[in-house]
Image: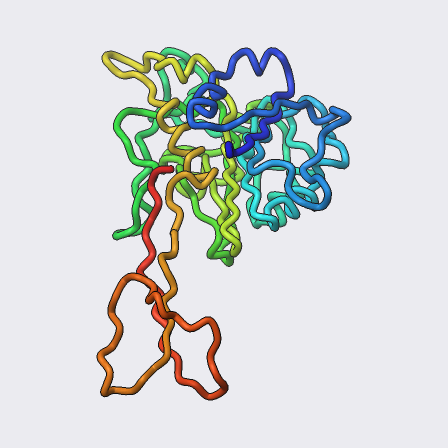
Length: 314
C-alpha cells in the first residue's frame, strides 16, 4: 500500500516552478494536491488521518481556513502524521502556522520580509548586491556518534530564508541546517544603515529545523521554500565548477521527515518462563516456538527485547 503524500501547492506559478513531485512519486508516494480553500480539504476522515504526510507551502492568503488550524495540525501529529512546512520571506506566515510554531517553541521574525543575509557566504551570481542567497555545505552531525542523515558533497543554495530560533527547554527540537556565524536576520525594508537589533545572528539561526514528538511524529521547518524550486534543483551554477545540490539535500530531508530513514525498528520481544538457574538461559534471537500465551500468578518470567535496528531505506 502506497503512502499518501499531501502537499498544498497554493498557486499555479509556484507549482510550475517546483520539481519536487517526481522525487516523491518515484519513491512510491501518491500525491494529492489541494489549495487551502478547497472544499474537500481535511486532514482527517472518520476521526483518523486522511493522509500519512502533509507538505505546507507558502500561501498568499493570510488565513488557511479551519481545516489547517494550529490545533488540527497538532492533532494530525498526535496521530503520527508527519509535516513538512516551508516558509517564505516574500509571503507573510499565516497566523495558524505562527501559532503552531510557537506551540512547538520555534520562533520566527514577526515582521514580513525578514530574511537571512551573509556577506561572506553568498551566491555572487544571483545575490551580488543583496547577499541574500546563501551557499552552505551539507550539515555536520549534531553530536559525535550520532548518525548524520543529511550529509553529502557539494553546496546547498538557501535563497532568502526565514531564520528560526529554537527554544532551549525542549529536547524534541533540533536544527538540521544552521546559518554560518557571519549571517544575521534583518528586514530589507529597514532603511537604517546598520542593523542594531537583529532578530538573531550566527549559529543562533536555524535555516532548517526539526521536531520529533514523543510518538515519533516528525515536523520539519524549511526556512526557504525557494530552495525547492527548479532553478536550484537543476544544479544551478554557483561559481566555477560548483553546482548546487539542493535536489539531493531535499531528498534526504524528506526521507527523514517521512520516516524513510532514521527509524528505530524494534526486533522481537522474547519472553518465556524462568525455570531457575539450573536451566540454561535462553539466548536465541528467535521467539521460542513453545512461548506460553499465558502465565500463572507469581510465575517468574524472563523478557528479552532484542536490539533494535535502524531502517535507513524502505
